[in-house]
Image (cartoon, rainbow, N blue to C red; front, side, top):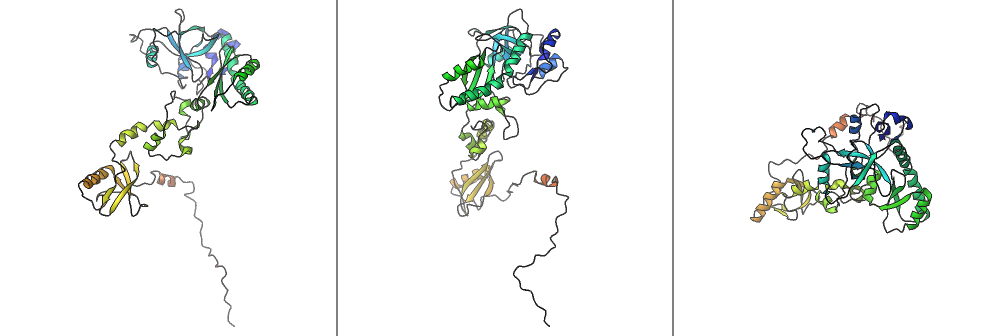
Length: 399
């Protein structure tokens, strides 16, 4: 959340209400009565924010000064703009920039020497790229119109969904973004098949009196815009920091010895979770030192085949063909040793060596859970009552 009172002069504060704030991707709201420098650092939690590590390095200048700044709009869109010579901008300034048509309102994310590094990272050619211009710092009237446009986005999204449902279009409108001057609205939608939305554009243009632009996005982009909580208990990576979506295949799940269960591997976008790729390279490097699991291990007790592997602990489980239900844990080095002996027509007595101790598979915090149990001080119920045996005839006293 961005409180707008901190971005306008004190003489114009009376035109804006104290509760005026706008959501453009920020995950936390700055505290009131803070300085401008603290206000800029309060927005460091945004998804597309860049840490300016050259902020304190002023004399001498390492990189040549540039007249380009980076401006952020909604949480998934930002671009570079050219600044006039007479205008000086800092991080956190709200500016009016060139758009097609009209102008848009955005927030400056980085300015100064760090822009050159960002341009190099994005592979933007300064000689052959035409940048749009920054008109001015946003006035109070611009900000008031911007706030009114942003407040209309949710209502417009629900109204457009009803219109699409009335026209029986197989599509889902997930987000709406208004331009800063309220002359254009971008509708983001998802659809499984191609949709003819020409009639929908006519109805929406007459209903909301704005210029309509339709953009189709994927399921992952929809999840990044809507946000949510993942199975790990944290906010979705795509809605907080992840900007590029790499393809995730089932081979990565097989490499990490994960069960191919769609309910566990799929995220809220109904696609494979992006976090499967995070540790995939680590598992691939670890598997380079592991032996081939298709080779049977021959001992004097019989042949043993592979069951499962703990890649990071370098442990492998094998079972004899005669008793496949019992798993025997051995190390990777032991497997290599047996395979080398089998190549020389030598067979060990057992799979495990003499000094091997099988690891404890119980959870590490099992005892801690028992110690912290709420019922550990409760007295167990005594079972002193004897159960009467049913259908047992009673003995009569002899007279």
